[in-house]
Length: 138
Image (cartoon, rainbow, N blue to C red):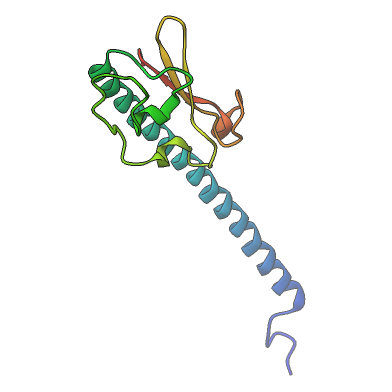
């Protein structure tokens, strides 16, 4: 058999290395897109919660207390007049796209914040691990 009739092992190795590099680059691009998509979904979830909290406030003239939490959007708190909910269909919005609970806080002045801790579920972070928060003025 002539020496140039087929691929040598070295040529096959070079082709495999090139294909591996291309695969790694493509997979990093896909993962980056997925992270950005989850951040966008988290923002949309927080907007939906913000809308539900606004409806709750319009009906009851207050926001849920910290003790009542976001559950007050699904079930009427005790002794609360004018509650016309549920303001959400289900509690799926109570967890962010990474499966971490959405936090709800209400300060002494009556301003709320709903927040996702990002991909790591913790305060702070950068990139997809950065906090995503919305409040009344935002």
